[in-house]
Length: 84
Image 1: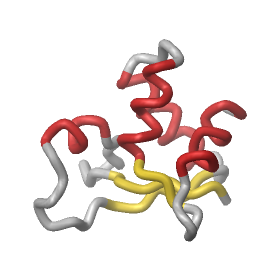
Image 2: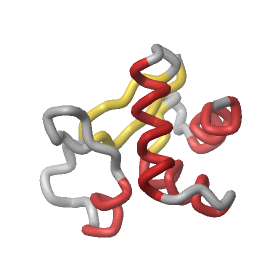
Image 3: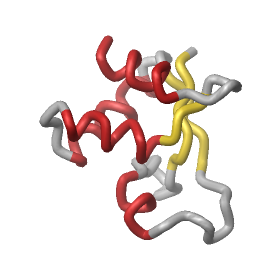
Image 4: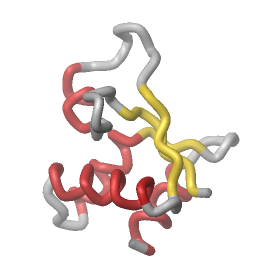
């Protein structure tokens, strides 16, 4: 958990938001499979550690990035993570 939160903080922009594809990629470099990284982000959000924001770029995201974004229960892709 701590490593994931540190990755989010380390990849965050000036507003504190990190792109979830970048976080999932960084977790992959640590040996975490994509599905497990996505599940970890969702679990941290559910437990109140992270805020996950939906993708709203209106088609400007690559298919690769879309595949790395976790989805909420409604299937909405979550593009940004912010530590609370």
